[in-house]
Length: 371
Image 1 (cartoon, rainbow, N blue to C red):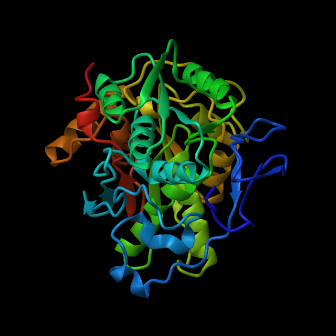
Image 2: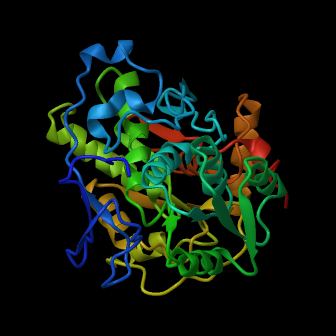
Image 3: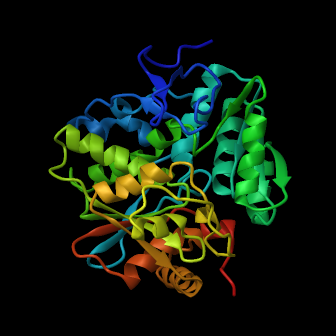
């Protein structure tokens, strides 16, 4: 088995304090069954020599728990474009699999490649599954992706094209997650969970490192982020904490989390002053399928990260999502309906100072939102 990283790096449960080697296939805390964090301390990324480095997220190697990737597809370094005088968009749909999930999926696939499991499984409403399927294909790994019924046919086609096996689960996204977690306990299985495995978060944090580099060593006043399971928001919180601790930014930006009004358990908990989501939310239909998560396993961490940053939660209606998708398309950017939620939110409730929104998935994956 290949060495993964320094021996001091380990999984740790943020609730129980239980630790586990990253070379194990244990996908959750054995005590509380909650998601792992990673006991990893990032080193400062030096600003000066970055221009000469590889043109992918791996240019921030000091901040990453893995290095020398075999299965990279050149992910990262997506453009930052101005939409208004105060709002810019990061075009993360311009990734190898057309979504921001590539940032975390490459980390999971690279880790799995080094651990050489019998099989890799993932669960997804589409984008994470396509990303894991693609990077597992690159790494030569046997992959099965669990998806809920009703997943976009184009996303299913993309998963199949990469050679992954599809398991379509009757019911909603939560039922799909339960089925995958049961399978994850089988021997020889690596659960490439974008929710439970913290390596994914250390991939998504490169979104903020890129903003920091592109803006000349600073960050905007506000980072507006779509939140379902919170993987991009928690990655952003990791990055801003690291940059601030290393003295590379003078203060941390506010994190503004966006949910669809139809499925907004975190927004409701935030407004109620709660520390957690008390019970699974009702699953109403929404165009923002990628963030329709009724009971996020990392809810406590998400709520704490938003509060600690001085940020807030915003929700958007289905009509606002439709309008935002058409508005962005009129500006030359065809983005899937989940990916336009942040633009819908920030145009409806503008913030003082500069803000950046991520455009997370390509419109070609889902088509134009309809009534």
